[in-house]
Amino acid sequence: MTAGGALRVVIADDQALVRAGFRMILDSDPGIEVVAEAEDGRAAVAACSDHGPDVVLMDLRMPGMDGVEATRTLHAAGSPVRVLALTTFDTDRHVYAALRAGAAGFLLKTAPPDRLIDAVRQVAAGDALLAPSITRRLIEDFTRRPPPGDEAASGALAALTTREREVLREVAHGRSNAQIAQLLFVSEGTVKTHLNRILAKLDARDRAQAVIAAYEAGLVRPGDHPHPSRE
Image (spheres, rainbow, N blue to C red):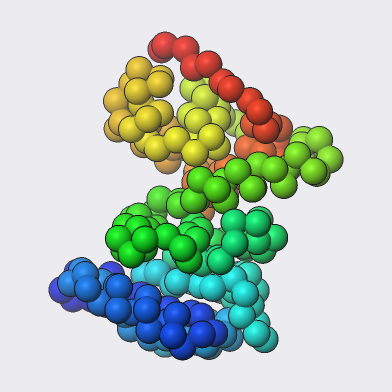
């Protein structure tokens, strides 16, 4: 953030008009500062290195280095920037790859302006953001894969307590901390504590990576409807 506390954002999209539109929306919020624009993934990586933004809006489909590879490059370099991936279609096959690469969230370009501002703030705060339609597509992708049960992921989940597994299941179903707290009859603070422990045990950067681990280990499967119990 800047000295005044504004969130610093880089906009990466190969279309100048799209970048201008995003900038106009974000500039309308005094708490957000657009520090740079980039026309492709390589320029986005350079802009993040030069300007140290909190969030980069990353179009997935760009010429040369695309958004997935740029996200992977930033993550591999240990960059703290949070990647909010932008996609035109909820069927985009880059979504799962970008999640694996380290993207913190996804937003459809058709989302309303106020949703973009909320998304930037949510991702900057450390929360994962998955548009409902994208979450559905992600789950459908898993149904086309071999039965889950990745050994490494399963081993990591073995360290979770019963309650932590319950919390992770609900996170994987796209529920917020407040919704999970209501379902499990605990405080929202307790849910946050469980989630922090889950991330630490799974060595996951954020909720999105924890969800991937849950599916790969078979803790959650498409069509599951967990019934949480009281403590």
